[in-house]
Length: 116
Length: 113
Image 1 (spheres, each protein chain N blue to C red):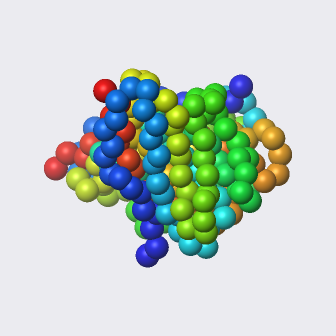
Image 2 (tube, rainbow over the protein chains, first blue to last red):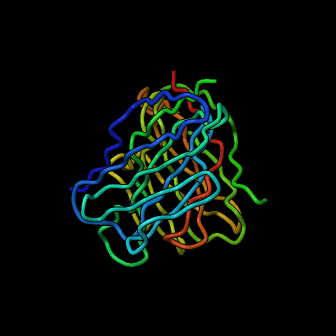
Image 3 (cartoon, helix red, strand yellow):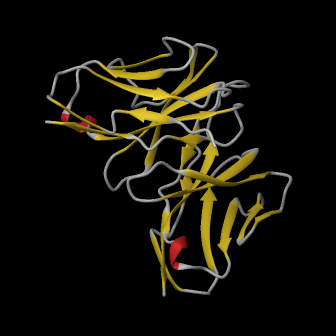
């Protein structure tokens, strides 16, 4: 069955550096992949969606790549700031029951700490 | 910006009691979801709901759980007979279409004693 793996539970980086987070999946390539941010005690907040035919997507200091050969997505935050400290989740639709059914499933997340 | 609202923010209940968690999704969204997050663990999918019926559910969503959209604005999760292991944060979410981003509420923290 499809699995989502975010290999790093925690990542500490210095302010101003680029943070790179990894999301791997094990079986079929999904039509799209999403990244969310979660702060303690709050619900996840959507950041970016990338489709299988897109190699890269950008939004301000965020960049996501999607490599269907490697079965991997990378999430980059450039010029990181302490306010970027949060848990970042990748998510895939795991539904196998056909059109109209959606089961967005999250990875365990990577907790990013940006040190001033 | 419209948001998903959940009530109550914290619910304490005794084992074996029924609880109803309430959500008001974003008004023009058509897909609704419940997720749960046990403290320190991942956000887990429970159920998705579209066109007044369940479209997907996980193994967690057993006969103790049910969902309902009783009117045009509310979406509820009922746990019939709570167990200690049901203690978690429960998040409601909605999306405009099935493959568009989810908008989450800030959750209801359920504590079963």
